[in-house]
Image 1 (cartoon, rainbow, N blue to C red):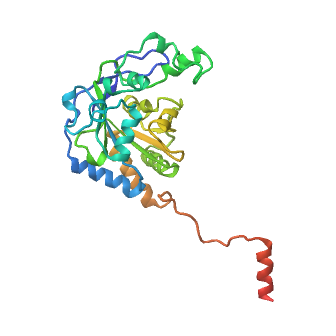
Image 2: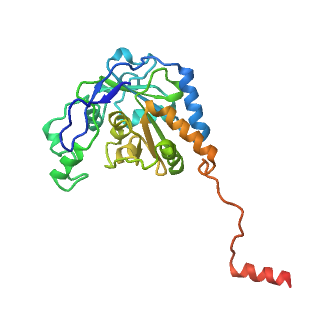
Image 3: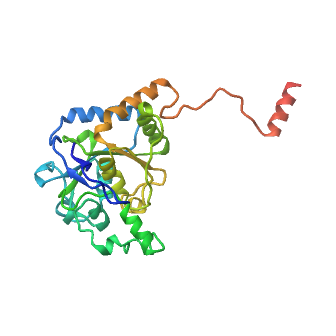
Length: 288
């Protein structure tokens, strides 16, 4: 589906595999089916914001007719994390292109802007997130990216209101809700779920990394997502390629049925609590 990581040639050491546009992605998908998937997620997670469907556009002909373009429709340029937040909080379908993007880092990750040597060398990272230029270079090299020019924009939409096959799905929740998603993914696979942290450009981790790696990501939102996307202190995020939706839902249902892991977490209530000594002394007086 959609974008996939290249396997015909090895990436350079330390770099992320660069995706290309694959065939077979559905431009249209049954909206009722996607709404059903959303209902099944919420049955086990009880989310406070919409799961977000993300689609990378090969051409503007693929954009949903009712999608809002930030510059034209809102008279503002937005960050990618703002577009995600509009979808998950307002339920809006957003289409963000180069002219709509206010964040040059997010636009470069999407391949909408050129990655000049000034950026690649770490100049946008040093003195803000890294002490040295070399550390900044390593940070920029680690960012998941789409190939320059491989897409014209990105669409974000609430999962239950879109009618296209997503490339990735993003879910924000509290620690326990995201824990349940991780447990669901490991239901069949076992082992551990590995994610990366860099504290910046989390839109790349959320939207792009699931596509380039084929694996879910468990993400601590970055500074920009907190400032512009207005992520709250208690929120973390989980994203995954849409191709894993059935497996994750099966894992949620199976682990819920097993009873050891549910949301809300089942507290143990059958115990005798401890109290201040004065309370116990008074009870002793009553029992005399």
